[in-house]
Amino acid sequence: MDYDKIEKAAQRRNHLIKCVTYALLSIWALLVLFPFYWMVLTSVKSYGAYNSEWIPKLFTLSPTLQNYREAFTAVPLGEYFINTILFTVITTALMLIVTVLAAFAFARLDFRGKDLAFTLFLSLMMIPTELVVITNYVTITNADLRNTFAGLILPSVTSVFYIYLLKENFSQIPNELYYAAKVDGTSDLKYLLKVLIPICKPTIVTITILKVIECWNSYVWPRLVTDDQAYFLVSNGIQEIRENGFGRENIPAMMAAVVVISVPLIVLFLIFRKKIMAGVSRGGMKG
Image (tube, rainbow, N blue to C red):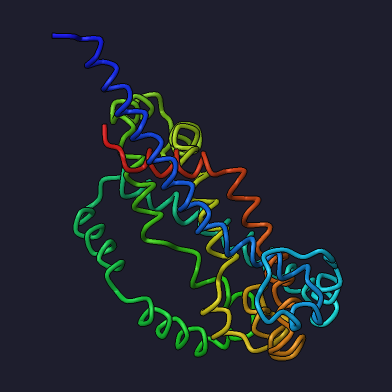
């Protein structure tokens, strides 16, 4: 038996498989990235040039930044950014406090009915989002919190999925470490701050980034609970831009606003993509 021929055939087969795989991935990447390219391309076309194209062109020889200037002058887009940053920072901070404490309680504390309570807690993930939105809207309205930052923030300060993810991560830490800390007189809060949080930092960073993205993209709830322009977020500002700013036909100016809104999230994801994947995969491992 000619082992050299068999090895060469195997190498050719592996090389062919890699070439096909990379070709398919390249095609898929082009399909995924093309909408972003089209968005940026449209945003640098003038209104006249865009409307004069009977057949859309994949490039432009006369790019302009006029659409970006209009994005900040036709509507108060800068105020929307400030509102969104405040909403994102406060909501994420409160969510981290609630998530870390709840995950620690389910992972390390012993109390009667813990397993049943956690099971019922997880069952909340089965409730349709629409029902939760309706309940939250009634609660916020009855509390007279519409058109306030409190009304925007409070329904978003907890997440069943994030608590579950962090609880599973906390549970991977050996119990012996917790018992040794208790013998040394360490309080639960100190053990949480000094031991669990540093060890599980990748998952906490992941949860933070995902929550920031979630807050930045919030649309339905802010649109429902606010009708005052002073509380609009960037995602909801797009509709206000379309209705009161540029009109329905000024697509290039609208695309410029979308680019401005999308850039912070794209940059955030590119910087922390490895931490996101590492945190999610760590949270899903046992042992």
